[in-house]
Image 1 (cartoon, rainbow, N blue to C red):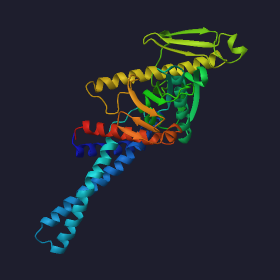
Image 2: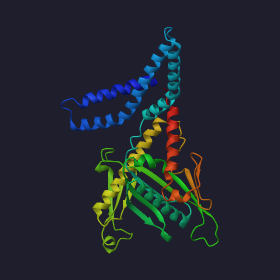
Image 3: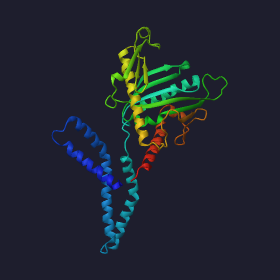
Image 4: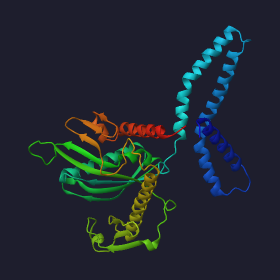
Length: 358
């Protein structure tokens, strides 16, 4: 489909929705669904209408210039206006193409953040905690709600693993490129000789799935309850409040024991389980659609080393886009993380634009 055909199609769709929304007898569910689509199309329609109008004006200017009856001053004026449009047209078309890109259905969702210590012993656990805190601060700066779901402490105040639910608008769209292996180079607090150590932590960002996104049958679950072994006081450790849920078809297992209530632990475990299964299915579909295409910003697999945090040099380097920032303190505070995420999003957008045929 050509660019002009795409424009015509979306304008027609926007008009059809407008008519349907004002029709009598429309159900509340359909009204909600169509209202959302109408709202999402509106910015695109505005740009597309502007493009159409300018194209018509350009055709009129060209006709005026080719008309022998047009005097020289009018022809010169038409030529200037046409030149100005020719200069502005590519920028407007690019803006429309970006709006036309297929949207990731998960982008608007909240997210489940999972951070785990990798190689490096105690220092890896400390780095995992630092990353977890970085995302907590980043969430606060964006006005998102950061709820700790579970964590497992290591020695020296580190984390073996930590899981949080981050709730807000477009959380997954901003954080989805954070999945992967993060590497740190620094002198550990436990190092007496002042030597620089290299450690890693893995980050996984999953779109938070609602019940309507993925249906999980009770018969596909095995739920085990057991006595909590973690901190929490006597009342936790003397009751079978911990929950382990296994999704039999996929083999996904989630354990939850942070709450004193078995019911609360089960609810949290189901929330994480649903998101993991949803993400696995989403990645499977994406893989089928683009089997032979590798994104410039990486696939998000945890086996990839995506970023290095070098504390002695004060730099953060993202290896997917060859970006280095010498402001490690601001990155770890969450303040400069958007500078990295913006570049990653831009590269992904450019790569998807290049793959489309207009």
